[in-house]
Image (cartoon, rainbow, N blue to C red; front, side, top):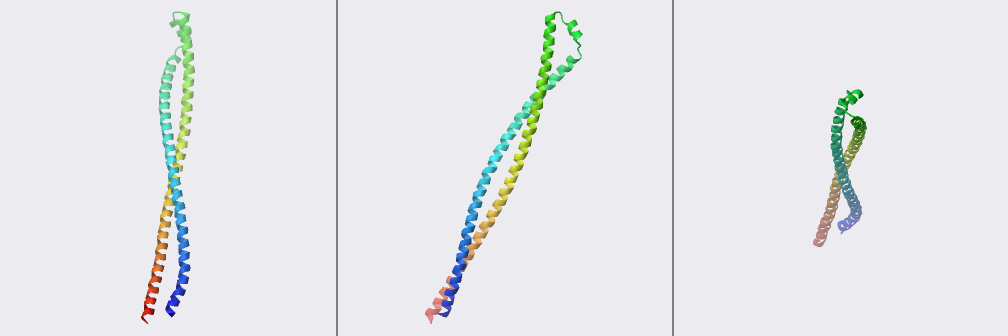
Length: 193
């Protein structure tokens, strides 16, 4: 009976330990739940960033195509301008049979120069736009990598918390089993006497 009373006393302190461990288990489960939600949120953020990156890459690809077309136009215009730059105004006059033809050639050259300037301006704007898009894309990729790194850290923390929870549950179960085993042994011993 003395041993049984002693075991009852130890169970009181064991109950305190169990309450403490149960509280820790509940807190750990809350932490795990919170981490799970954070992981899901980061997964969604990563998907959204990946979609934004994909859109930026498409924009850059389109800009590159536009720039290639503009570059071809600019190169053709430069070639044409170079050809006509070596022709003096007198040659136009002597080469042409009538005044109407001269006026058309002068008008054509004026329009060509205006088109050349516009093409060069468009080319410059597209190049600037491309640089901006590439800068934004690089930032988005860096942000995506940062989010992925944070996600890996959170996943690792989640694994650690789950392992800690499992350890706490095992400790609780072991304490309960040991206490019940001793109590049963003492009851049998008491019954035999």
